[in-house]
Length: 596
Ligand SMILES: Nc1ncnc2c1ncn2[C@@H]1O[C@H](COP(=O)(O)OP(=O)(O)OP(=O)(O)O)[C@@H](O)[C@H]1O
Image (spheres, rainbow, N blue to C red):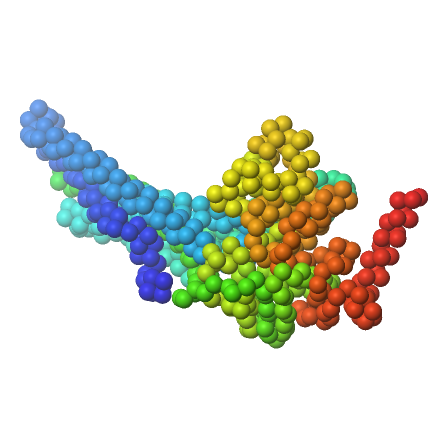
């Protein structure tokens, strides 16, 4: 990667085409040859005009007109063929480039720690990858091809300008030089960052639009229409302000560019009249006509060069986005992987920060804990204290900044990801179910599980009532034809998946968070099934569900502030006992309010 980084950006982009990059180069050459071939017919047209002017008014005496016409035709055809072949080459390379870039990004994503995906949504990542690769593909297939033709045309033009009439050539050169001079400030310095900034404002506006639409039900329920609109309006205003500021900053160079590009005739015609004098010379007239025919092509090409510069800024920004993903640190696989000797878990002096540059305050500070094989422990404490973070470090969603986490006496960093994952089941706060049948959603828990094993797991997870209500039973596709599951039902399906996986270590993060009382009862039954003879770590707010665990760790502000069993902690008059009192009070309020 570092070698890759030092390469010029364009070559870095091209390198994704692999050996097909040579096709891009062939395509560029063919485009240049095609541009030259397309210009040659104009020379023959000039010859035709010349031959006619020389014999005027008796045009029947004109010589070689048919030869010139055939040659013009043949070069035009050659130009078209070369153009077609060149486009084929650049397209083949661009498609390969898009595929390889997508592969590289997706393969790299597979190597990233799972924690990366909690900060980057799959939809967002897919959008970045699809959008960026489509932009670079478009650039390599079309704009790069156009660029080479667009650059060759003014060069050939310059050569021709001076070979026909050097004074008229010099006059035509003035607008070309002016065009380049006006183009430079629009694509250098500050303006180079424009596309990046522009993209940011555009994304912000799109994100706010999505947020606004998603929030419409809540907005309506709370009659907050003006307030909810605020962020969206602000994003639109910021986008509009940025775009208009940029438009104003390019007002002068852009107007000057457009005037210069269309200014050939303004210079050429008065100059032609002045130079012609009172006697019209046939040779001068035919040269003059040549410039009149030829200069508009040059103007079109200058416009193309400007468009390509703009497209390059977009493609370069797209490459930055892909490289940002590729530069994410992958999860390091151990050189000599070891197998855990048991299913005990130990944290030794663990410090952790999501952002390693965040200074002295850590998310986790000096965490030390030991969970014996087949013990159950609970992590409790105020919201934001660090419970989920502690649990996420065991399956290496992130790696610790300092200290070690051991599974069966082996540092988790020395266990291969595959082995580690096969040892741990994680039931998340927000369960992800695929838009697939219930059966497949559970079967994903263990590769090669038989149908009867899947059915047994579903039954043990107390899902029978869910299956009975569905039109196609276990084969019903979730999310189709109005088949939606409640939060608690989804949790039970996720538990069935974990039961089938039958991993020796279970991490349950707020497994009853989304459940109503009936679902909670069934979830608790499923949990007692899943946790039999397992090492269990539970994160729970409902303290009643963890009374019987072997040990409770109270986490506050990234530290373990208390530890012990329920009775010890209740008797110690600390944070846990206050939480227990509050929990009991809340239950009494609930009972009272239900009785009223
Ligand atoms: N993916 C993340 N990126 C950055 N910071 C995070 C991330 N996840 C959590 N945090 C921060 O880490 C701290 C601990 O969060 P964590 O979710 O571990 O607490 P918790 O005790 O599980 O909270 P809760 O009970 O509300 O789920 C919080 O300050 C939170 O803002």
